[in-house]
Image (cartoon, rainbow, N blue to C red):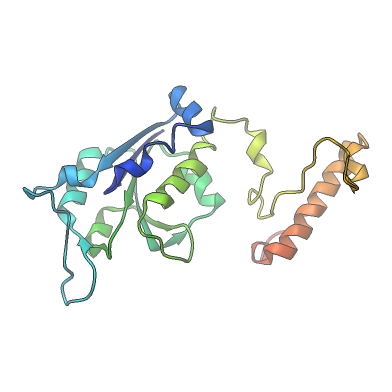
Amino acid sequence: MKIDVLTLFPNMFNDIFKESIIKRAIDKKIVEINIHNIRDYSNDPHKKVDDTPYGGGCGMVLMCQPIFDAVKTLKNENSKVILLTPSGKVYNQTLAIDLSKKKHLILICGHYEGFDERIKTICDMEISIGDYVLTGGEIPSMVLIDSITRLIDGVIKEESYQKESFSNNLLDYPTYTKPRNYEGLEVPDVLVSGNHREINKWRIKKQIELTQKLRPDLLKGEKDYD
């Protein structure tokens, strides 16, 4: 997979992809991540990329020209162009799985007061990472890249994410490691029983219990997991 990020603040990405799973994916050439400064595509002699909004109001609005030209330069027949904006579709694991199967993603990070509305005409999708406002789209783009990259074939073992949180509209089950007793806190007996059928039943039960307690919204309209 190839991921191109359009941003006004490329230095924010200097170290984020140099560690852990994403670094290994890059080193293995499973994913290619390129960071592009939107100002490099500006036709303005001063590399201006924003202007005041028509109709008045506070803040500055990102202009069409630099972003249109950047997308035209980077886009190919396999590209999916994503605008990161608070008004977009709320991001979730199902969407991450879908995007992990794409060959090329172009992520556009907003800033200031927002985008010229016409920029949306060159985008395939608008995504929000939650119902709150950040200073820009850089952190949301990092969230997408991290969550998508780990799902690409060959990055981590498939079994590592098949039954984790949100994979079946349930939160993940509790996990434990040695020692069995720590300051009076015991590991549940079933986990050391060696009975894998009972262990699996316990884990599903705990997933449902945790989801009902912490995220009951995930269970609405979902199937029976028994």
